[in-house]
Length: 189
Ligand SMILES: *[C@@H]1O[C@H](CO)[C@@H](O)[C@H](O)[C@H]1NC(C)=O
Ligand SMILES: *[C@@H]1O[C@H](CO)[C@@H](O)[C@H](O)[C@H]1NC(C)=O
Image (cartoon, rainbow, N blue to C red; front, side, top):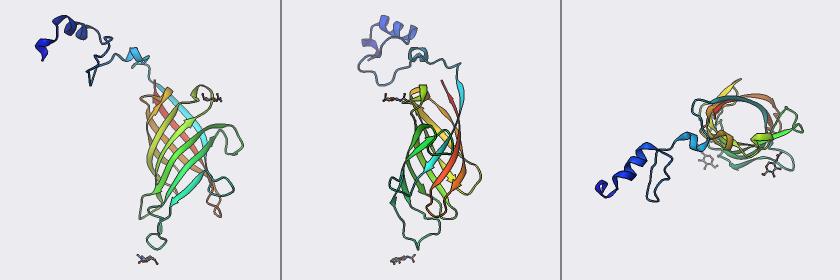
């Protein structure tokens, strides 16, 4: 096959990755600068906000979609909540909305109360509006600080990596409603 490709176009491909990929190319090496990415200019950003898990009231943002049998474990092993939780600047739920945490959590431990969190932080504020980061990790909710990986993001957070630290601010033991402080550290371009 190689013999069929003219030498000149091979040279061009070698000299410049700006050459558009032929329609038949499955994988192509790209120059990051063509996508506005400078690999030497990775930024570290810190975000702090409060995550509101609202189970009670007329408009819950966290809905139990799987309830395991109560006699199989003391940790609710297998439960699943789908969330669209507001993220606000301050613990007060009526403070400025900076985004929403959309995804789910599930009880994934039979020994202690440890959740598996899978959620996108979809930001709605300032230049971050429309950009988001994706968190997936283990959340043993009775620990003071729980750390979960930021596995990537979109928009301003393309190629992002980092971690989130969660610490419970308040829990209403009657309703289960919780306010959790998140500190997120993200490397991105
Ligand atoms: C749990 O309760 C269900 C329904 O009463 C019963 O069928 C099941 O055998 C129980 N399981 C255990 C582990 O006790
Ligand atoms: C965020 O973006 C959406 C969609 O583009 C737009 O409707 C909304 O007004 C923006 N919000 C802010 C606070 O800029």
